Length: 144
Image (cartoon, rainbow, N blue to C red; front, side):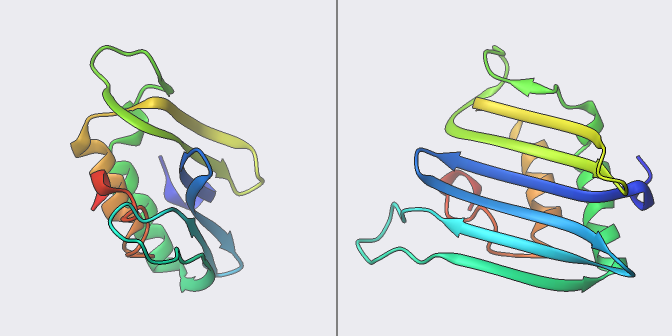
């Protein structure tokens, strides 16, 4: 997929009321990152922190995130839905990856309900996203 044709890339995870998302949006000659997290910390009794930030990043970094997600994470090879697949990895999370073109039209929508793709694929996408926001999805033990 040509990253220059991608206008928006989003990945989200939720479990009950816990949720986190990362959205990368092309704006002008760069990108914005919207990062939200409100997840109960499984390892602490402290009050949970809500993170809700918007960052501006240069076009080169945004396109690097996209290229790595598609190349190393091989997103175009993923099944469109992970639910009852026998070879999918069980999880207590629901998740989506949504990619739109520069006009806002859907290019790719992948989702999972209680199942994940193989760890090496998901971890590669998370590594790409963390080039823009290193805290993303670390709130869940399986992605630390």
